[in-house]
Amino acid sequence: MNSLYDVWRTRFTHYMGEVQKYMRFVFTGHLAIVIMFVLGAGGYQYSQWLKVASSDFPAIWLAAAIMGILLGFSRPVTLIRKPDEVYLLPLETKLPQYFNKAIKYTLGSQIILVVLLYLVTWPMLRQVAGLKPSTILVGLVAALLLKWWNIHSEFSYRWAYKGHHVWMDRIVRMICSFVLIASILYIQFIPIIIMILIIFSYPMFWKKKLQETPFPYEHFVRLEENRMMAIYRFANYFTDVPNIHGSIKRRAWLDWAYKLIPYAKQNTQAYLVFRTFVRTDDHFYLWLRLTVISALASAFIHIPVAIAVVVAALAFATAIQLKQALTTSTDFRMDMLYPLPENSRKKATVKIVRYTIIIQAIIVLLAGIGTPYFYFQGLIALIIGELTLRLSK
Image (cartoon, helix red, strand yellow):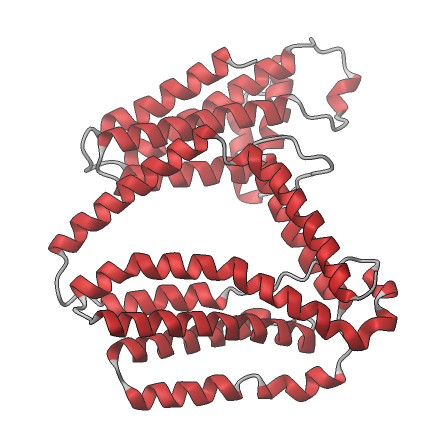
């Protein structure tokens, strides 16, 4: 490598190849259809609300709060690896070359969401708050500049304090971003000047410490490992990702649920599968996440066809993924030492997944009370989930 620019270019190429390799399994045609229906239904509901929204609605405060929270989450992408703790030590004085590239990529990858979300709030600011387009545009420019400041600030804070209490730093930056955007939209010059001074002086609190602190490789390595693991875990919901092992938690608050399975020899596998589902983060949070999304869609989307498509797709995803995950586990289990029938685990898995589908259908049904044809939503989730269990291998 001739320079750290070459190091970044090589790692970035490998990183993009790794992400694209798995994301092509995630964003398939089925998911695209679901996203299209969700965005279409959400946009329709949003446009209908804009027609009846009261002028007293705090549109500016809401838009500023959304942007402030989004801007506060500005985790830097450095692509630092564990061997760098040794091999980059001789080049530590040249690290700014590498991190300039990293921060530019972080800004480019995160600013897209800022622009999209701000454009979503534009009609609300225009129709409900009655702001001029020029004022809204100035707010957008401010949001883009604040994103740059947030990324630099979080990177510097993590360097200076090795990531300790980073949530306190985020809360401060969220508040600063929120107040500045709200002041700009309200055209309050004195608060704008005060917030600009605070924003410029805020990084000065740890500037000296930053200069005296060597680069914390361990923290940034752990940060990158967690970020990549999150990508792999997300992709693992759609395809098999090698070397992914879900973390295990007891979840003592669900201990009572084990008693729902009668104590009997024929229920051995059902008990083990249910215990695996409850305690494995990947399985439990997969079901929880899809159920929550389905319930929210049922509660807030008032277009029957759109609700039916979303609920059916999520019920299918829940059933097929849980069945495959709980059936094809390659981990060693104590039940492998006992002479149980070969297909007992598959039957137990179907039984447990059926219970999760029933619970999901009930939650969707309750969430949709008050919406048109709400009684069909739970029925659709139940039917699609059962058909998936019966027809899938």
